[in-house]
Length: 379
Image (cartoon, rainbow, N blue to C red; front, side):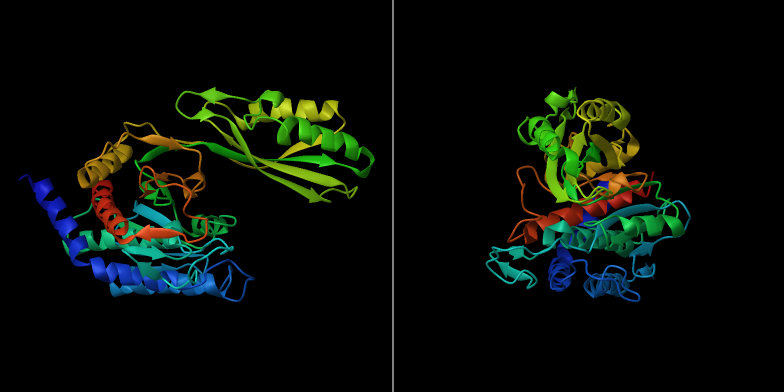
């Protein structure tokens, strides 16, 4: 057995030994209602998010890490010394509960080896798995080229203000990942933009005809708009998240919003040009409200390969890097990509009623993250 195999074995054994402790910490964290609410002093995203952040940091200290709370916006647990750090960044805020729950959504209810609670998958369970992965590295006293941080975000679901604050205080990582997507390692995210079509009181009929013809009554590929761009690695353009709102302009008219999930290989300027042209030809206005450009890393970079190797060693499954239509912290934090926690075939769980994650999957994630964080810290 090689030295690397011996280290891997010890890291995995640590996770097995701490299995029950990790699961109890996950259940404790998901019992906190951390939906964003009105800001208070020291709690920019509400008291529940503040409580969740403080608990995550307290668990970090319990595991022997140094911790930092950046004014309630975001915090992290760290191990090692140096300026150029590696990170895993998840979040402790959650989406609203909604209806249809079989058990209390903040109960940490566990049945047949599965934990049901809002945020257990998105994203409290995975970020705890990262923390325990780093705890395994720390327990072995392994020498690291780069220090490692586990970052606990507080505004992933509603606006990324936490990351903006973080980057105003701290430099970005040299390598890292967010456990808020899927496996295998995601080497590239599509771009995501929000477009608004404006209509005034004097042109409501034209406005609704335009919206119905080019969005609601059309394919979600944007073919009628001339933006049905296809890329062999990402797939086809997707339009989603339609929203009609009264007001939104000086003439108290109406606004229609659409989210564009666009492949790499095309710019938002190229996408907006035909939309604006068609809107103007109808006497309407189209404007770009928000845009996050695609996140693209080469599949053979050392960072991507390190995560792929970690996934394959733990699961025995094919870890060929993939793309995603989703949007994560990787859109706003340089140097990172999505990595887990959902395994192939696991879809439609995180924002739905009875959100769940199995104990076995949490343990497997912690093992993958232990190997990945150690490998990244050696690059």
